[in-house]
Image 1 (cartoon, chains in turn cyan, orange):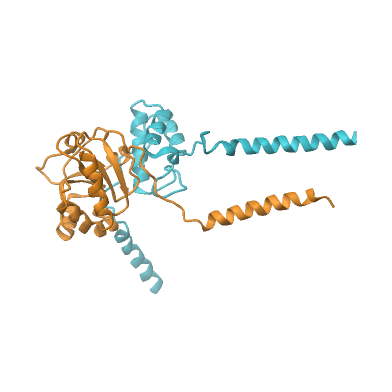
Image 2 (cartoon, each protein chain N blue to C red):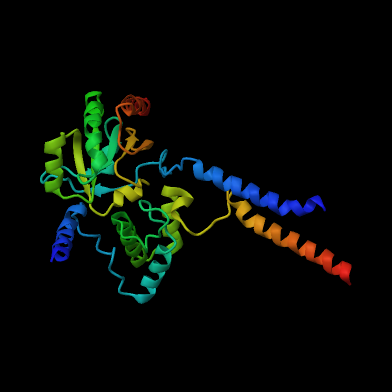
Length: 134
Length: 175
């Protein structure tokens, strides 16, 4: 009984915690009618970073701002915009930070170069060892 | 024993050291807007109060420089910021409010409690203006010059020490 009362109280506390009383944006949780467009939107949303929650894509986040970003993505896709146009629109505002699609730039090139270098070094070591044996 | 045997261990401890160092460093969580220096994008927001004029980008292209304050009645740091906005207003700043995902009755209640430093308030129910100007949180304050160009961004609540800085940015934007 006490447990039940506790549970009920926890439920009653929820509306207080949810301070933002405005309903979510129309397309925050509603899919587009056209499945092909929705698939495009979904793919893009999974590679856009939620700005207020960090380390989550806007597709995964329930933050109100992520919902508003999903709404933007869906209405823009529905209006015929290309996903990459929407990505660059956001990157013009928030920089690389907003995108999970890695791009090669002055600060990120070592991430691409170092693995390649390591593979080359490993190949060189193997080559020398096997040549010695033969 | 060849010294080369120690090389992997050395590399590994170097990596550990780097990771440990990075973990102790303060992480900068702010996401600066790339729109600083650019023109304020076109927007048109309904006023928070019935019968009052809308808040739009055109309004920023007339008169002198203004502050654009991204805020909301549900945002706690905005309460802390309220007296500082009042100080900015007293210092001669015109402050235009953009209320994020907010209801008129909540806005009214907030202003009745904490004062109203705003010349106009627009309702950004879908965070459209917030996204368009590259703001990633509430509150944020932008300095917009008389031609409607974004000149400066302040992230987070305005503290007492930020007031002279923002007034100076406004003055520079008016030159």
